[in-house]
Length: 60
Image (cartoon, rainbow, N blue to C red; front, side):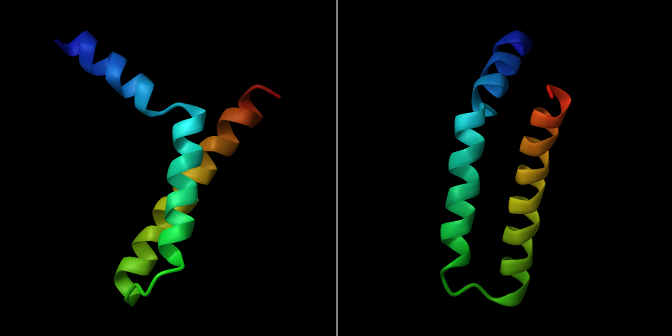
């Protein structure tokens, strides 16, 4: 069972899925979010972008 969960986690964090998440967060920022929610969305977007950048810097 634990192996299956690891497999599902690997599939969730593909580069394409991360890109879609970042794009979705960018679209969410275009809506009317209050201050606290906006900060959380920006923080999550920045963490995802940082994770994506670290993947590329590890292989360059």
